[in-house]
Each structure stands twice: as C-alpha cells, then as structure tokens.
Image 1 (tube, rainbow, N blue to C red):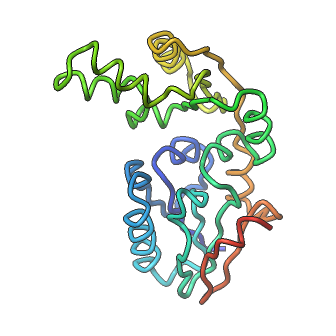
Image 2: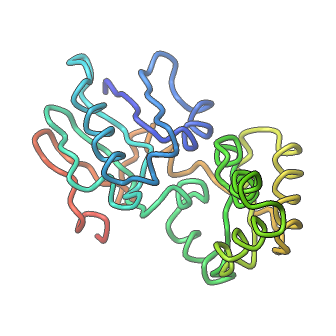
Image 3: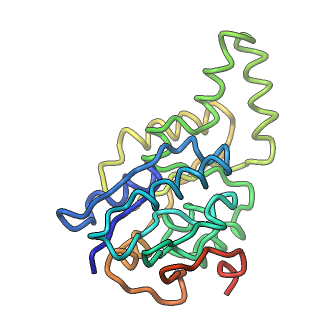
Length: 217
C-alpha cells in the first residue's frame, strides 16, 4: 500500500511516533474545526493535490462537525475512522468514549495536542482578559463551560505528561472542575496505519464519497 496521511495537528501528536518512515503526511490546523465548511474544503484540497504515486489516503479525523461528509475520494482509496470526533481516537474506541460519557457526561477532555493548540477554557479566558478584565472574563468563560463538571486529561502513553498534567490540573482548579487523568489508547490509530480496517473504519473506494450513513453502521 502506498499511503498518505492527512490529519488534524492534535491527532498528529499521537501519530508521529507510529508513522512508518517515509510516509507523506499533512497535519492541518486545529482551528479548522470551528468552521466545518472550511475544514471540508481544506480536506478536499489536500486530497485533490495528492500525487499519483499514492493509492490510499488515511484520514486522522472522524466526522468532525460533519466536515468530512461529502469528501470525494477521487482516484484514491479513502480510509477514515468511524467516529464522530477525535476524542474516540484518543481513547482508543467508540465504546470507551461512550463509557466515559456514562461515567461523567459533563467532561471537558484535554490531550497534549489540544493543550499545545491552546484549545481549553483557560486560554479562552486569557483571550478575553484584556477586553473585559479578570472578573467579567472569568464569569463569561464559566458561563460557556457551565455544563462541564470534570476535566479529563487523556494519557495515551506517547510522551512525558508532567508538564501537561500540571497545566490541566491548573485549568481544572481555576474553574472549579474535578480533575482526572484517564488512560487513552492508540489502538484505533495503529489499526488505521496497519491496514486493520474492520468495522471501526470507513473505506471509500476510488470515485466514492463519504456519506453520513457510513458513520452509523
């Protein structure tokens, strides 16, 4: 198989130690998730500019706010994990994600990648600070995260956690959320890279498109 990887930069943090040497990779900015239409357009552009020496494109994305829906495989095989978003990729399965939601539905998840990208309530508070001052900025962010009671740091075992553990605990304490460090897994990502495409993956053959119903099989 001649593969190329297109992934979110947060997922890229988990993939870097797993990718076979010489495999072409493109890691896209996390902020694209905020604008699903732009995410979709950027993904399609990356697929379309893929060279003919590749036959399979592996996506380090899930449905991701429907940004992956409608992607055309063009002349390539397109493989995408059958998950709603990347939290399941960090936890290793949809089942584990569902189990965590049952344990504590109001959970804000963090990983090294998300912390590095500045995607958490504390960075949003810091952005609002110059405009609103500390008290109002805090109240506004508390309102945004009012339904979250737990901050869970996912540890996939891929890197040293001390710095990220300290930061995540600070965010939890600052916003009076319960802090937990929970085990993650790279099982899905390993399967993606190793061609173990079972029912956890969508395989779109050349000329096909990613459709909504594919994610619910």
